[in-house]
Image (cartoon, rainbow, N blue to C red; front, side, top):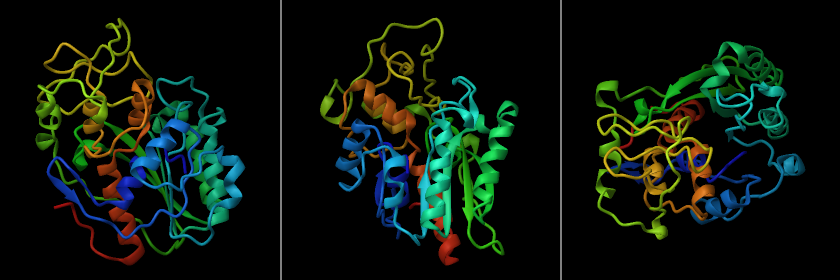
Length: 307
């Protein structure tokens, strides 16, 4: 659900390479997917699967397959984000978590994974968090949540996101994926995109960048070569950050690298829509580690890293 361009789906499917590490193909098969944004659906079809349903989720809920193993999705966060309007789950966008509640009721997965922004854990959103957990729990699931820092899992970005997990067997526990990279060994921006410094603009691989002027407010950050990239955001044009060395904003290919997308993942959109797709995505590498934990829950197998 809320597939966007397919970052979370790619992570759960696996079978990709990022910065020299191979993330093995996992045993999950995507049998149903939905997204409302047409440009994101084009990218999804190009890279993940042709069968995505590009319609309003409320219009297609009844088509969700039943008795599935896993249901995943990152419900919209605009009303919860620290940069949003603070409407919480009463807002039009973040209130879409209710569609996920309904989908879980219909599909009856063994386990579900819902992703959202760190702001969900802030004090002013406490009532929203409690409402979300209550509604998921009312379906009979044992629900837990945890804040994850993407850099601790091999993503070259200081991105923090909340994952809510519900399991159908109340006698068991969901074991979160273990962090395997310490802050001293986080992948830096230069390690992630340094090889692209001398590459000319190339739309074919999304190596294009915004020419927006510097802003006195947002969008004025410059990457630090020796640190992971800042959180890639979805607000467009003036908010994409500056290269640590070159006199320009980072390219969409560089932003995709910072989000841990493989280089053969091509965004089928122009600049602003590509910015939105990359910023809204769950980093595939982080999603892959979450998928491994879900796999372990389902088959009691051992959790392992990419190799």
